[in-house]
Length: 286
Ligand SMILES: [Zn+2]
Image (cartoon, rainbow, N blue to C red; front, side):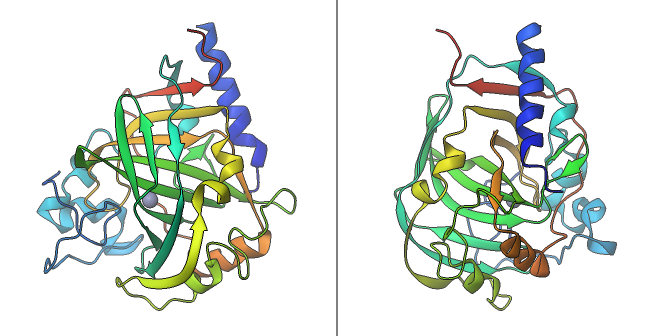
C-alpha cells in the first residue's frame, strides 16, 4: 500500500503516452457536498451490506445517480485514456483558517473558514471542507494508497458545482511533514479522530495555514483532471476532480491511528464510460 512513487510514475507514464500520441441543487449535510438541508431525513447508508455502495441508488430517489449515473467516481486512474491538456495548472491559494471538525460516522470532516480558494479554467472555487478516506478511493493499476484527502471547493458563481482537489497519501517513515497531523500538530488530527460520532462540528482551536501545511504536495508539477461525482450519496455528477501528481508521505503512526477509525470508507471504482484524464503540467508550451 505504501507506494509513494507509484502514482507519480504512473502519471509520468500517462504523460509520456499523451505526448506520444442531481441532482436537486442541494446536498444533504452528510454528503460530500457543501450545502446543508435542515430537517431533511436521510436514509442510512454505509460501505457494506444492505446499505452498501451497490444499493445507494435505491435507498433514496434523490440518490439515483449512484446507480444510474454515467460519470461516477472514484475510478482507476491508470485505466483512463489520457491526453495532455492545454489548460494551465490551477492556482491554489489556501490560507490561514480556524478549523472545526466532526466525525460523521462516514468520515472525518473539517470545515474551513473563508479565504481559501482555487482559480482554474476561468472560474474561482472556494474551499469549504476537507475529509479523509481510508484506503484511497482512486486507484492506480488497481492498487490503493493508504489515505485520500478530498478538499471540496464550491464554484463562487454557482455553489452547487464542485471542484475537488484530491491528495493521495501513503505511510512513509521518510519525508512526512512533522506537525501537519501529529500530536499538537496544525490539523489536530488526534483530536479530530477522538471526536464522538456527530454531525455537529467541534471547534478545534487555533488556526492552521493550509497552504503551508500542504505546500510540498501543492507544488506538484503535474495534476490530472477528469469529470466525476461525489463519492458518497447523492453521488452528484459534474464534479471536477483535480488529482495532485505528488503523493503525500504521512507519518506511519498517524496512518495507523486513522485506519483504527477508518480503513474502509472508500467506494468501489466506477465505470469509465469513455472519459479522459487530462494532464496539466508546468511545462506546457504556449
Ligand atoms: Zn470524499
